[in-house]
View 1: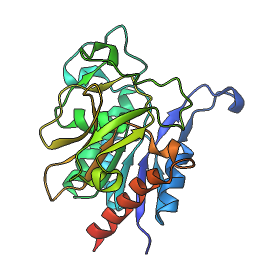
View 2: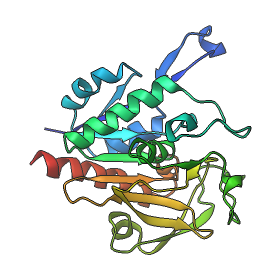
View 3: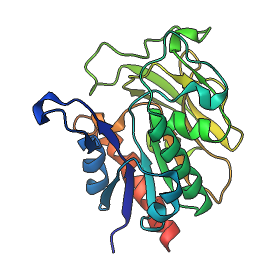
View 4: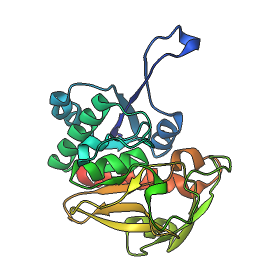
Length: 242
């Protein structure tokens, strides 16, 4: 039986093509990546955090996608003038999903906002804008087309990500929030050339968590290595199932 992967969905508002109707969605690249890894994607609508246990009990792994900024109120800061749009309901539901997935020891794959949200869920903090990072020298909101790798990352070769990409790779980058303090349950495994954390994994051998700051779902059609992140994720779910 193929694994079921729950993808935490977003909500699109004021879509002129659909008469302003709110739409639950996830970017197609995530669906494609999971399907190409021979698993079945299921999109979760933003829901009551109390229902997270029920959602997670029905799937074998959790994927967290990109989207709105994570609210700084969750890590004890007021919103700066540089903060973008937030969605408190999405934050609350996804934090509940993350904690329930960890409680049920189900694998997590987190991308961009997903990486930031997992970090905040366990006590980490964020730069509300990369311009607040004192050592900023790399363009983290790329002007190059988003399906193309734009900056280099250094990778711990002993990490799960390192076993896929080696000790260095070129990734795309489109984020203006970034990890400031990494939460204690996680270890950084990749960094941009100016030192920002680009990926982390769980310290505990009982947890299977891989989080990346870039957007592999956008690069898949042009860089087959990015599919390996999705394939590895599905393999991690199968290992837990067995």
